[in-house]
Image (cartoon, rainbow over all chains, first blue to last red; front, side, top):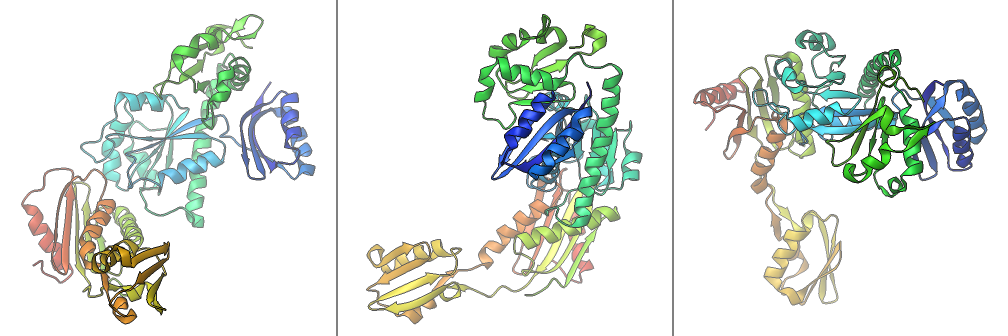
Length: 312
Length: 194
């Protein structure tokens, strides 16, 4: 079954019926947000049933939008968490990604500033590698980006989208070896992105990220993962009641080929490993559970079919 | 409001200069410093690396008095002050407490202060000087330029005289050549550093 990431936006009135329908057609709700009288559901729905959901939502005043970023965890990497980069442009980009369904995390480097002194430590490298994609938001000078980019990307294995003030061609010219995506004319600035040309730039960043994610999806499809991350999410919700006590907005963060479980590794990893998915196949049989470098969370990476010979 | 008479950003990378002009403008606006600066020249060279800001200030003569932010009304043996904003509330209360004593000063609510049995009239209260903005301009300017300068430029040197200032920052040690650089940037504006 092919799942499509979509967002449902509508009112609180009869939204439970929409939730029921998504579950009945075999879909998964990744995140549910109730904001005053509005409801936003980020979900995966079987491709053939999207139209059914759309026509069901119409009389309720709701809308179903394709959201390619749903079910992805994106790292927004900035040289530091100081006023030079926050809240603009880093928060603006992270917030824009969140609005479109992605789970974005801001990674402010401890020593990412300057040209000569810029560095990336092992914890930062590992945290970035836990994401599906990393968006590097760098500064205004071609010379600086050229000098520090090789240092800041050392050991990074996930696809990178590079944003900086030089235009796209200049970024492509100075980045060796090339990264997966480039967005030019987005450097350091100190005002809120609200003008139409700035919002168009945000859309350009989203388009570039979507392009890179699509490439990653194609490569995953060549050797499909043994189980859908959204299905694992549902199973953990069902079998580990403690997850409902977690106050984080996304206690279970769905990634393209894995899942971040915001429970302590030492206490819950064994329990999660032994959860049966189907016909005696357990979560531990089709995935690797590792301690995350982010707090004491659990990071589940689902193994591909070529390794397990199982698809459930 | 007085505008900046001269404002230039010099950089070997034209796009970088454009971005830094925008950043400088945004930061100075956010910190209400546009009206303080008369001339400003910024030089950034990421190759060296160095950031130099030199400028000339407008003459700040204005003092903040009670009448600037509060309505002072004599009401049956007491003086009632109704504040338009709280910006200078704390320094004003400190002055009142020192001058009139705790028994004679009462803050009824956030925006109302009452003076009881004081020996001055409403007119005199209106003229009390509460703050001198020129005292904090230097601190505000340095903070603003720390925000404007490229991050990581942590070796800094700054100087502030009555009407001129410079701010130099780099991530490497600053050499003696910096003084000549600062003088040349002042010369670009037709000024001489005192």
